[in-house]
Amino acid sequence: MLPDYDVLIRAGRIVCPASGFDSPGMVAVRGDRIVAVGPDVVGSAQHVLDFPNAVLLPGLIDLHAHPACSGSIFGVDPDQHMLARGTTTVLSQGDAGSNACETFVRETIGRSQTQVILAINLSATGEAGPSGCFERIDTINVAACVSAIDRHRKHIWGIAINTSHRCCGQTDPHKVLLTGLLVAAATGLPILYGMRRPEDWPLREQLVLLRPGDVVTYCFRSTPHCIVDRGRVLSAVRETRYRGILFDVGHGCGSFDFSVAEAAVRDGFPPDTISTDLQRGHIGQTPTHDLPLVMSKLRSIGMVERDIFAAVTSRPARTLGLFDEIGSLKVGSRADLCLLRWHDSGEPLVDVHGQQRSGGRWESIATIRAGRIVPNAASQQATSSS
Image 1 (cartoon, one colour):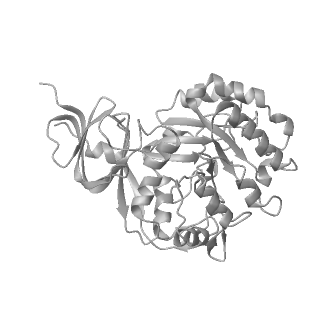
Image 2 (image 1 turned 180 degrees about the vertical axis):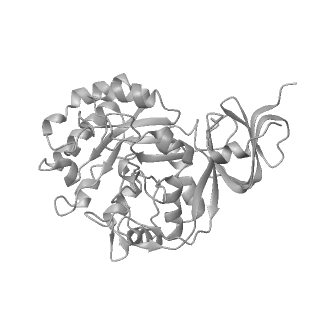
């Protein structure tokens, strides 16, 4: 007799931020779909995963990282560095522009088990070289960018525009953003935006140009721009959120400051989404830079756990327009799942400036992607035939 399910996962705690479900129980998978969720799921399965001391979530969604198997100076292999650590969907922040879009779709999106989505770089060259992507204004070609989006629309969520001094050099950042808005208007797509330092261009003047559905990343930097002044979130930033623009962490190698994050959360301004900005510079770090680690840092400064879980599941899924498929545990959604275990580690958590906070951390111990168990030591040990 054939088993009822392909995979059955038991967990000490199952959390679906979208529905509010939070209970011990089981998730049953058939093919690439969730077919049952709850405390009383019954039936046999080809594979059973049993994690009594773990929390099961929808597969984590990283809204800003650098998954790229070729062509990007920041790129890392998403299957090697993200998938086994709980991230089942990741948005590339500008790794490819119109020149390399075909290659990115073929070599990264097409060959990765991780679901990779592109925020196409406004610069045709993308992040192919060491110089800033907008240092040469002639790399911005509206027609070429629109054409690349039209050809690969199912793989492209939006347009990546970072107006930082590193990216723009002497190029006018105002011109860069206005040109990007032309592409966004022509294609109907949102913008993933990195701000310019305010002494070059006041934040209010930048943010007023953004539209509902756009995303501001690097929101907890302390320098060269900062959304907090004397412990309060700037009024221009609050007004921007009221208009429907979202704010994303984008931790990276230089964009997460504990003091800024604490002040913002204390002032009622948690991030809408939590992301790693994972890139080559993180490879080999200890502890491993991944989404569970960044989630742990937000927990350490007082962000509420339910908001943390939503910021890596349902909220980014809605932002990407994929909530019908991912970001929840509703029956019929794709079986992208993550199991996390909490460690009360004595080791401090550290921000990009060396500031420390105490607290434990989450660790990914098993991942299911489209119904398939992702190989790692924890999941192999927990798998058995029923």
